[in-house]
Structures are given as C-alpha cells and as structure tokens.
Amino acid sequence: MSNPALLAFVDDALSDHFGHRPARASVSFLGVDPIEILRFEPIPGERAYVSLGMSSSPMTGADALVVSSEGPRAELMLHVRDEGDRFADIWRRLALLAASPAVEGVVYKPDVTVDLGEPLVDGTACTGGLVVGSALAPIDTADGPVTVFQLVPATQTELAWARVRGGPALRERWTDKGTDLLDLARKSVDLGS
Image (cartoon, rainbow, N blue to C red):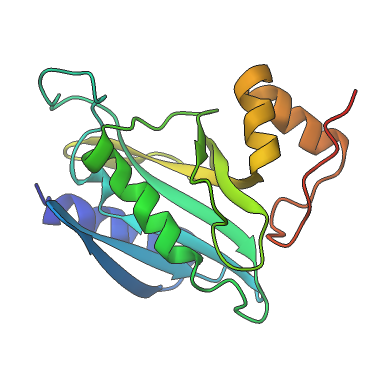
C-alpha cells in the first residue's frame, strides 16, 4: 500500500543528499504501487539511479505467513559512469528489482546476490548485482529507518562465484584487482586463485 508521506520524506532526503532535484521515470507492475526511479548526477558523467517506492511497505520474506509492519524498509541505488547516456535504460531493471520485495517477497540485505539471467542493459556483461551498504545514511522516518542499499553491477560469473564464496569474498577480489565498479562495459574480474 502506498505511503505518500514516507515517500515524500525519502524523496526530499535524497535530493538534500545529492544537492539537486532528480530527473524521474516511473513504471507500474500489476498489483504493485508504481516504482519511481530518480536519476541524480553526482558529478558530470556519473549517474546515481535510486528507487522510490520500495520503502512504502516493510520487506517481508516470501515464506512469511503475515506481512510484518515492522520489517526493514529500503530503497536501491545503482551508481554508474555513463557520459553519453549509453546505458540510460538501466533504470527499467532497477525498477524491476525494486518491485521484487512486493512481488516476490525478496528481502534485500548486504551481500545478497541478484541475477536476472540477462544483461541489465544493452552493452553490458552484468546480469545482476551484489547488494551492499551505500554512502547514504539511513533515512529516519515516522515509519522507521529507510536504508538505501547500493546494487553493484556484477557479471553472471561473478555472481555464481559469490554464491559459493560469499559477497565479502567477491568485494575483496574486486578490490584486489582494482575493478572499476562504475564501468558497465567492464569484463568479469579474474576469479582464479
């Protein structure tokens, strides 16, 4: 169920954090309130896409018998380098992932992997991502804190490796290899020993 006051508060907090009002797009899914995607430009050539609408309801696992009113609330952010707007349509996939808690009972938390099985957008080998904490502090609202998780784009190979070794191991490998995680055109990191 939509929570306009909470979403307005989160919207304002995100605009305050980035220092400007965003460009907006919206998509509707059957039986779910619309999900907006806000597009910020932290610095020229970079895009921060942030969902708005996922936090309307607390996340509750698909196996729960009752939707919890006290479950965690969150939004998803995807930060990429895209100087020529080559990957501008990626917002559609972020909206799909942001609808997943309401549609499929997904509960996002750090080190969860998400794989759509096909590229997030034309021109990338990334088929999903690794959920991590973001630089944004939780947003305190009257309905409880809203966490903004970052979705770090990852290739299918990286995601499969992370499901075996864990999200922290993948993050460590990315760091060790100096991986540019804002580059959607990158290849899979070397996961050998």
